[in-house]
Amino acid sequence: MYQYSRFDHEFIAERVAQFRAQVARRLDGSLTEEEFKPLRLMNGLYLQLHAYMLRVAIPYGTLNSRQMHQLAMIAERWDKGYGHFTTRQNIQFNWPKLEDVPDILQALADVEMHAIQTSGNTVRNVTADHFAGAAADELADPRPIAELIRQWSTDHPEFQFLPRKFKIAVTGSPNDRAVTRAHDIGLRMTEQNGLRGFEVIVGGGLGRTPMIGKTLSPFVALDDLLPYLEAVVSTYNLLGRRDNKYKARIKITTHEHGIEHIKQRVEAQFAKIKPRFAGADLQLLKDIEQHFAPPKFKSSSAQAEADSAPAQSPAFRAWLDTNISAHKLPGYAIVSVSLKKPGATPGDASADQMRALAKIARNFGHDELRISHEQNVILPHVHLADLPQVFQALRQADLAAANIGLISDIIACPGMDYCALATARSIPVAQQIATRFQALKLEHDIGPLKLKISGCINACGHHHVGHIGILGLEKAGVESYQITLGGDGGAEAEIGTRAGPGFGADEIVPAIERLLLGYLQLRLDRDESFLEAYRRLGLAPFKALLYPQARKAA
Image 1: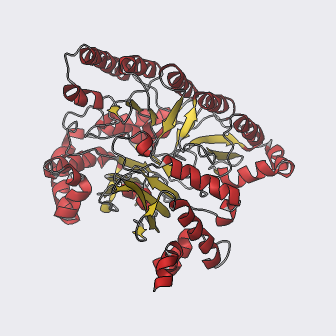
Image 2 (image 1 turned 60 degrees about the vertical axis):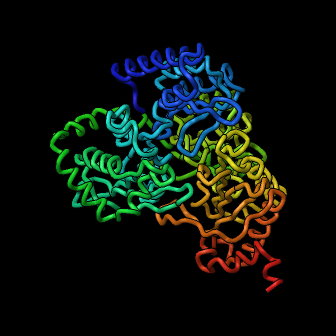
Image 3 (image 1 turned 180 degrees about the vertical axis):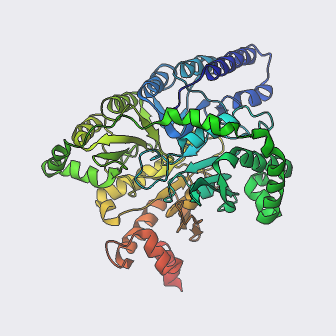
């Protein structure tokens, strides 16, 4: 993984010292909260419903055991003993005191971490496929490109005050695990005439106006990528609206001007600025790639030990079935660690659990962890012979839930329990759905299903691209939950369709139960997933399951 250069260390140290002075001025009253707001946002500090919240960057979701240990220490020393992993592969601390934040930032700097550009109208934390560098289906590891983009965009003088926040995602696989089409810019690695480059997608995004991104260029060569990105962002910076924040994202700019007009503007800008780069980014990329060399993998001679273990433990077999993915190297596996034990808060990990994950990564995972946009933790390189020990260690840490990709593996925003923007609760709904289907013992029978919950129209829970999406809203002082069906964040990305009127807080879990019990009767066989059945049958039969009274009235 990437290690800081001398410049990186000096840059972060300067930012920490600068923010320490700004916090002191806020505390002594020299700065008002309004004056302090843009300064704290530049350093990832929000004012939430009950307290400040610090959002820490985990670039492209990659960290090592030392960094995870430090996050555990921060959670225990300066917060309430836990952290919340987010859909942007970051971690949030929900209860820091303002006077402690500079010390937290210094503790992060000590392990080469920071909170810069995790908020504000700038290029946010660059996300990537959480299986990057390990996936059997990828063309190449996209993380060096993500790091290149991080360095280019950090403190970029032109892009610190964009019309609105700006999000970039990168994948090296045709099976899109980075939801690239729901980002301001999505980059999908591809090849053309033996050369490697990227399809550049723009104008994706969720929120109150969900849109799937459009292909701006089917192929941009590696040596052209940074100037091309600069052309895209600078074009948006000029065209993007600043009169209405709800219409300021690049998806609205692309919609209003049309993809062809945007392409013409970008190509013209690209032609102007490309000579400035003169290939320097390729040399930098080569330097960066050295940090992402594969670990020293073990031989596969001990595979038989893992092959015999499943027969000894039904719990282990179930975990292997759901939480293990194919690795590019024979004898290895990718382990997904669920932070979604039924009844728990999706995405939360205690300090003890973080330390356990760090120890497992150090002992069995080549000292590497990933955070997924699905709010889980990934051990990307685990030898098959070590899987039984990994499982036992996870079990001891209460992290062995065998539910990756099932209904209880729910993405949920913090909702009204924490967020000042939320209009409904998300966490209790996620907990109730997960525990209900655990009690019914149906989630393995239901099979692959992505259920996502947002507590407001800003859609931080990605509900628009859930196979089942739930949006919590406030109506006349009462929580109301709308259901969307048929969304997908993968390679064939699609925005879900709203099924009908919302459900009350006491109605939403029974509605989901009716929907999925009905699906079990509608599917062709056990191999037809919920999304496949929905695409085959359309909305009507599923709507009838959700609103049986309307069917009777008709």
